[in-house]
Image (cartoon, rainbow, N blue to C red; front, side, top):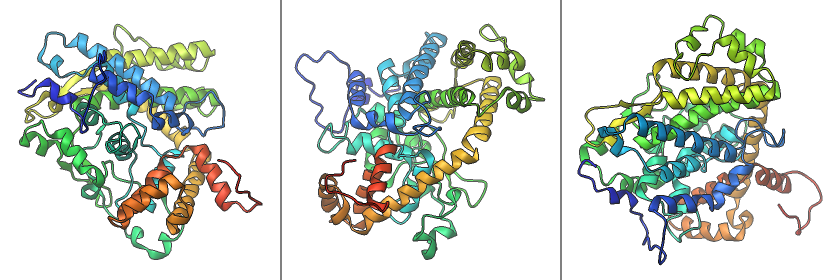
Length: 453
């Protein structure tokens, strides 16, 4: 593989002592560890888009991650067929590894969706910030309890696969004036967009990323970690590249939240047939442009299925997923890369991507940006800021015993390390746990030492 031995991708940072008569590959061990990890299980109680408690029908972070893994496996299978016998095939990942990358992609997301992410970034502005994808890397490599020091101790290639943005926080963040306003720093009332974090990994994981990128040449590492400047001065800078495995996972994620979140929205009545037809008015050609062996739908025929009986809706969503899976192809991102794991990216052809994006924009404007969804997100944001503020005001008093021990060890290295422990604790909460803890601490009522969360 471009002068890089394949077994270097199976290396772990820890001792990596397989059990006697171990029958699993390293990728299968990664997948097993992930499925049995507590951060993965907690995804069942974390918001996807629609708030938990609305119904047991709508998707959570856990069911979303399972769907991403299924789509990611389909994309990988199609790529292996499409590029059989060609150079690109040697760079495609193992199927079990692809499952693990997809299942792991959201474990770093905090309670209450992106509202929780913004809230924690706000709270950590002076202590290294917070970003959900960066927290995923941190959980995998440091925090989970599978090993003493290395978290799940994932293989190098799993680390590379979940590294969606290979540049650290401090190199990408653009500080805004409001973040330095002392009066506002004491309040949970702030403009969410002012504290949206850059897409990055956290500075605390620089050595983890160095380990993941070690097999690549210096030229590839330098190019891969380069920054694409923003066109607007107030926007954060962005990373320029993603590895091949990451782009397959990322594409599966985009397909899932575009189509499956649409399915939930239609079931809830937040997207109607009239909205669909109005949204695609003048853009009916998007469907015609995608016509081929597996897809012959039109704007109206798709609407008939989506807004008809439930089994027809399911069939239609499946048809659109199938269109996108079978259309996937590899694109050379930059010929300057020496290794194909960085040179090639999985993409959708332009007409199919245009249709996917148009569908997603309908979900974005009618669901994600809906005032009721935003109000729920804001409530979660407020709870996280207030919880964090209480815990940070007197960690020795309010943190649970096990977390307090970690805090006392880490704060000896500096305030930032101590605040990171509090951030890890809050970000690992489920929506329900965070709500109950908030009520226990901040809602006036008679309490008891025997109250349980």
